[in-house]
Amino acid sequence: MKRLIIFIIAATILSCSSKKQDTATETAVKEEKQVDRNYTVQLTDSQARNAQIVIGQLEKKEIANQLKVTGKVDVPPQNMVSVSFPLGGYLKSTNLLPGTYVRKGGVLGVLEDIQFIQLQQDYLSAKVRLQFLEADYKRQQTLDAGQATSTKMVQQVRSDYQSQRILLRSLEEKLRLIGLNPARLSEGNISKRVNIYSPISGYVSKVNVNIGKYVSPTDVLFELVNPADIHLVLTVFQKDVAKLRVGQKVITYTTSDTVRKIPATILLISQDVAPDGSVQVHCHFEYEEHKLLPGTFMNAEIETKNAEAFVLPETAVVSFENNHYVFVQKEKNVYEMIPVQTGASENGYVALDDANSKALAGKPIVSANAYTLLMALKNKADE
Image (cartoon, rainbow, N blue to C red; front, side, top):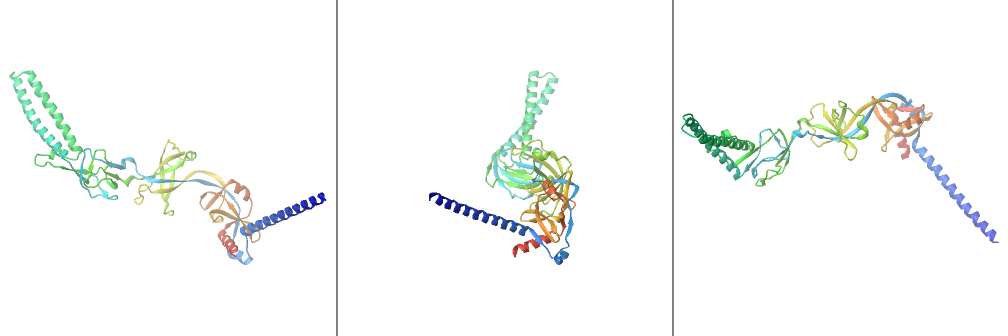
């Protein structure tokens, strides 16, 4: 009796298992049919004539490999200036805003401080003192020629005279350092204010001060940039650096305008590898680009050494849901959409990777009007 019960239970379990397997198999078949239905399109004779489908095969061509990288617009160090002032003072006035254009020698701002007065006073006093010592030295020389004075006295006066000359030259350079011309300075035009002059022509990128603020010699008051010599700094992975050389042509474009291409040339390749394994490649634009600003992000395409590859016309490849596909003719008016991985493109042809090339070798592939089939496939899916 027990054996009979066990047998019945076992039979029931096997029966259920078999039903589940049959159900799973049926589901898999349905899914397979669904996939096949989703990726296969059949045209009528009339549709095929109107679609003007062209059939071709993979071709082997020499095609330029293309390296796609990113970077940003930069300026050389000599075109970027941080403006400080050698003496501290209070900012009396400035009219600058970020983006303001300034010419070399133009006034950026005005500083005011008592030490400017003191420096001018010291210079004028030293100048008067030098005139006195110069006259005294000439007098002592005359007396020495007539042996009317001691040699020691002449030496002392000469030493004082030379020391005063050194002091005066030193004060002259200090005045020039803060933008004052010693030749134009007199007791009648001593000023408590000095101008801050622009060392380059360019644009103001930063204003770090406000009127009334006291600034010290270590403070950066303004930052200027001259975009006349902008260049492109690309970030290239270390494994790709061997493909590059100085003088190589580069096609660049901004992320906001992919249609407008800007040609450039590789100027130098950095010999330093960053912690993330990247190398900086500096490129020079082939013509002056006024619309590009420092810091603008760019895309770049670099053509590397030519290589043979299996290719298809670009009209054979369609894009659908962020993937690339081609249509293979299965029989008359029946086409199957096959996913592919594309590579470099040139002169209207696009390369396929090795796996796709082997799988599609010798097969009839739609080489023109493939998008007509994609539209038919989409319409079929919507039904």
